[in-house]
Image: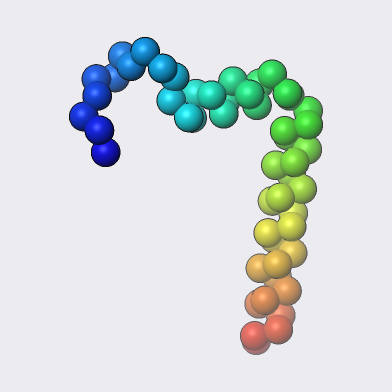
Length: 51
């Protein structure tokens, strides 16, 4: 990790991602929900198969 001060001239990846999420709005939220549902289905399926 670099030892840069908190007032760095370039925005961090988190800030860029959050700005992108705000700008795209609904699409990003839809993708997040689909990803969450997909992961839930995978985990439930694995729990069912390995019980």
